[in-house]
Amino acid sequence: MSSAASALARPAAVPEAAPRHISVHPLTGHIGAEIEGPDLSKPLDREAVEEIRAALLKWKVVFFRDQPLTHAQHVTLAESFGAPTIGHPVFGFVEDYPQVYSVARNRFATRHVGEPLIRPWTGWHTDVTAAVNPPAASILRGVEIPPYGGDTFWTNLAVAYDGLSAPLRGFIDTLRGVHAFSPPEGQAATDDFVAKNRKRPLVSEHPLVRVIPETGERVLFVSPSFLKSITGLSPRESQQILELLFEHVTRPEYTVRFRWQPGSIAFWDNRTTAHLAPRDIYALDFDRQLYRITLKGDVPVGVDGHASTAIEGEPLDAFSAGTA
Ligand SMILES: [Fe+2]
Image 1 (spheres, rainbow, N blue to C red):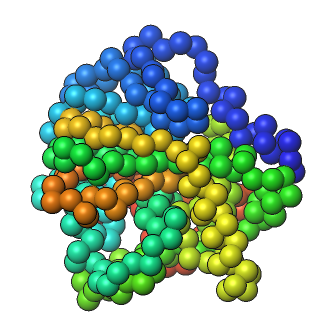
Image 2 (image 1 turned 90 degrees about the horizontal axis):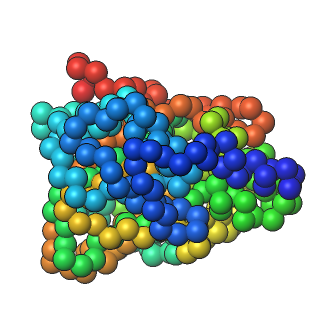
């Protein structure tokens, strides 16, 4: 599989016409672009939405500056691009805004105890891949931002797939893996974490390579924090292949690093990226407060046409009153 697979991974289907309602400023060779032009506090017209969507398909994560939105404006923005889910299916949402999840600096303090075993990929993840239909996209907005530190990284999992050798791509194309919420290696779950996960258990098996319908891209769909094992392999085979893939997808050339400011917005394709909040934030006294909305996603489909399957839990549905 090869060169054909590699060609598929190029974003050839993305419209190349110059956008008229936005300007797009790429930040690296493979991922990330800053978008200027639209006022996101107001409803977007259809052309602007389509241009932003095209930039997102191509650059995987797009950034906006100086857009100090309210929760309500954040919800309206998200609804222009899809159907918001509940803030977080396991860890809840902001009072009065069930679609909004608080990404606070100390949100893990009530979930895990002990010191994590730090590996090169520790903390990297794709949002909510324990669900059978992980969110299609996430929109994260910065409110309280430290004067330094607390950046976020994203990595392009389509380019990472392309970067594997052809024989390895051919092998990985055939594999599936189990995704679940659990504390980082070396840490233990708190009673609160166990109780929340019992209330809404989520465990799913996804193909290691998923195909994106709009572009035909093949994506190395590995979410280091949540992908626990490869189905059918021995534990040692599984661990070593996963470590190879986790290390590969976090190579710096596939990534972009974003420096937050109050009013910054990061909007990413959650099907084709993983992201990381580096741990430097915990070495600082500054607070950081972000808010996230995720959009309902499809069930991933692998190269062989087989879809992901739920081992535990229901699909993540669009939020509607009464489902919280
Ligand atoms: Fe995340």
